[in-house]
Image (tube, rainbow, N blue to C red; front, top):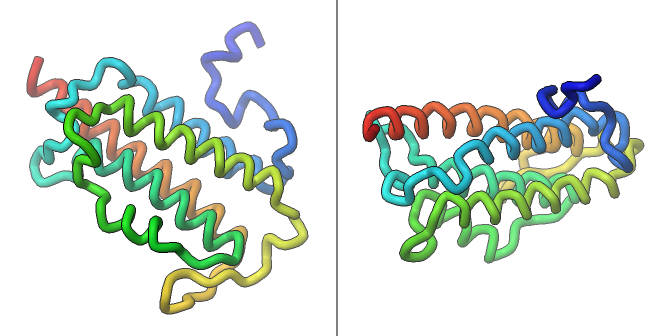
Length: 173
């Protein structure tokens, strides 16, 4: 156990106060956060919105993960999206302010992950199979389905972000 800092999050043991059935969700979110942090302070802002070979930009992935977590955790709570959330959705992939950096977007995402972990801590495991509705179409899912999708969706976009960032950085060395 001397190299515990090298282990992936899921191998470091249970997270305090997170229900047992939701540990994998919390682990996936925190693992994604750690992996995205590898570019903190080093990723050039001039590459943030570039789309090599038509891929989604690094900035988009950071914004999208943030927005999706907010939206899916809202649905998991049995709530509908508000106007702020809908507006954020429409703005994903666009520079939120001039001079926006990787670290600015990562900071926002880190806050959203912290909020998501707090919601997991407040989630009653007995409600995980309850129906929750997604979107204006009210597509049925379950609370667990939404939370699991939040985790796997985050991991998918983290992988895409890392590949895109490495492509951009290798082209400009």
